[in-house]
Amino acid sequence: MSRTVWHEMVRHCLEERPMEACGLLSGRNGCAETLWRMENIEKSPVAFAMDLRHVQKVLQKMALKGETLAGIYHSHPTAPPLPSLEDIAYAHYPEAAYLIVSLSSSEPVIGCYRIVGTRVFSLPYSLR
Image 1 (cartoon, rainbow, N blue to C red):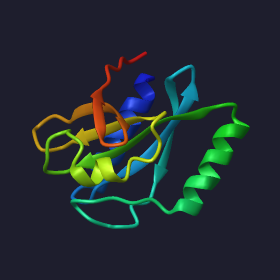
Image 2 (image 1 turned 60 degrees about the vertical axis):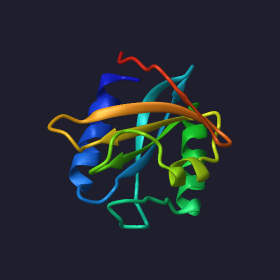
Image 3 (image 1 turned 135 degrees about the horizontal axis):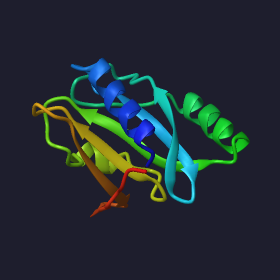
Image 4 (image 1 turned 90 degrees about the vertical axis):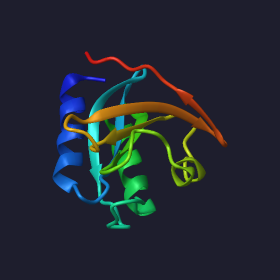
């Protein structure tokens, strides 16, 4: 992902604390180039959900830019950057990377995963 997107994602998560933040990432060739802040309609410190109509509108905007969904991110304000059982159950985009920004220590820590069904695979990522 671009460094700009990484910094925007971390900033968004810090701004929403103590609630979970969430958003979408889009780009080309597997590189996240654009961040789309989404509203956590759960307004919760331990869960997140996005309005499906808003998700559809953003997916259309991505397509107009010539980009595709590269990732879905959310924060864990007080937990490690590991997918919870709820995160896994609601992971409906197996082609996307799932990024979790943990704010439980002095510096944000990001975990990146592919979630297919109930299987979770750690994904490496790099900054460009």
